Amino acid sequence: MKRFLLTTCALLCLAASPVLAAGPTNDDLVKDAQTTGDVLTYGMGYEGQRYSPLKALTPQNVSKLVPVWSFSFGGEKQRGQESQPIIHDGTIYVTGSYSRVWAVDARTGEEKWEYNARLPDGIMPCCDVINRGVAILGDTVYFGTLDAKLVALNKDTGKVKWSKKLENYEEGYSYTAAPMIVNGKIITGTSGGEFGVVGKVEARDAETGELIWSRPVIEGHMGTLNGKENGMTGKLNATWEGDAWKTGGGATWLGGTYDPETNLIYMGTGNPSPWNSHLRPGDNLYTSSTLAIDPDTGVIKWHFQSTPHDGWDYDGVNEFIPFDLKKDGKTIKAGAKADRNGFFFVLNRENGQFISATPFVSKVTWAKGYDEKGRPIYVDENRPGNPMAAEKGSSVFAAPGFLGGKNWNPMAYSKDTGLFYVPSNEWGMDIWNEPITYKKGAAYLGAGFTIKPLYEDHIGVLRAIDPATGKIAWEYKNKAPLWGGVLTTAGNLVFTGTPEGYLKAFDAKTGQEVWKFQTGSGVVGTPVTWEMDGEQYVAVVSGWGGAVPLWGGEVAKSINTINQGGSLWVFKVPKA
Image (cartoon, rainbow, N blue to C red; front, side):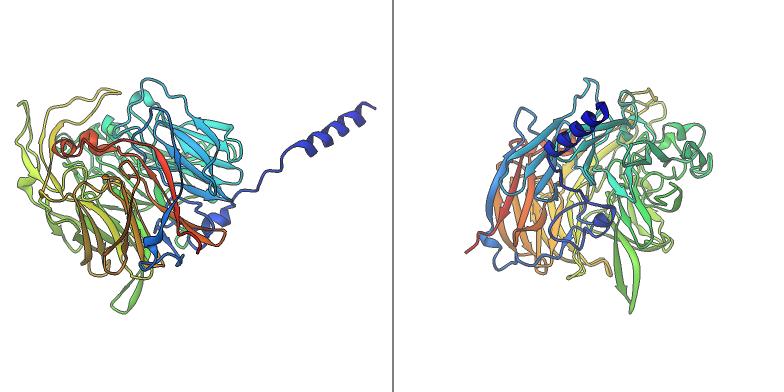
């Protein structure tokens, strides 16, 4: 009788429970770039091309695009909204500053749930309290927090399934990137390079959050696989002298891309620590580099270092986007990267072989170019001087500034035009070195700087670049820096936002501005597009912030009147 009662109760309880919708599978994630009814990955596809095959919106009709609804993030945490929305089954998942997540009804803008991480007082994010988005698989959404945790939430309720500590925030670690999911593994990096932490890439089981492999990106550190040693990264003291490798930087703070064809993760690494390059002779591998990593083992298959022995904070974290390069009658499995150091790189994505490097900004002072082996031809006198026993070394004017020819904000690639659309900035810096000693949890720079705009009438420039030649097809100049991501579509459109508050659309072939909308705060998020109920929608997050107002010097002073904010905007063309 007791067994009968228990069984009956179980059946009744099951019948009373709501039926939860199934979530995306690993196969769905692989196909994300081809499907139009959702946006399941950061980058609108594993490759991060940010290209949509949708054609309903065109330069001819985009002027009719109007808001459907706007969702406010609320509260006092109105700053630095750099998120890219994820859309699945009529729900938008979006993150906000201070490690918050919302699920919002895509049709009505009504909130379904909110998760607000409890952050300790001692967090030390280098470049504002931003978060760039979630990952989704099955019934779970995943995101990282400013105190360096990875959190798994039920996609229907927002309830915590598990939370894992990635690193110790008291040492300067944080986490701001959108996680990536490859074959059931959650791929994460770390932030905190300005505190002398050691960057790494890790894979965790999506169900449990348990660590599968870990790969530090600085030579001398040991990788692991299933709890066992899995080979040292590089060779001890090969490109680092003494113990400098122990606090070598190389933060993997932007996340990566993945190519199912080569089965490789492409992850960028940040600047070496400290900035004062005279304290760490050598190339300092694998900082300021692109790494190709086996997603099953964490083994580095190839690397390309864009700025060996970096002395200007030219992080190499910028996204490496796989594409097929048509050149000299051949099709090459290639990848492209617009680096902070001001050069646009094209590499063979199968083996890392150097193909080309061309400047994509108007002024580069630290190098004359790259030789045939892909090594920079330095301008030696443009390296900040060695302070030795002095208070500071000789100052130099360097371009681009340390915020980069392009910073975190992702570019896009159109399969139709064959062009990359790069959000770039025209600025330089006075930079000098200072003596510094490492102290755990303290800033580890050893340099001073002042950012300066190169031109009076503009800083930001959206450029369309031909990867086969490196030539610029067209450009759009913007008064304030461009700090948001880019989207392109088969409808011959390019979307991006500006700090002045506008989401703008351009003709992908000509660069003509064909539409704009004022969102009320600076747009530093990344737009997406999808199809729902037979119509094409566009969404973007608005809310000024990020590194520019914190680190921008004279640049920040010139744009300090921009209002902060926090909202998600959704647009479509009304039905006739």
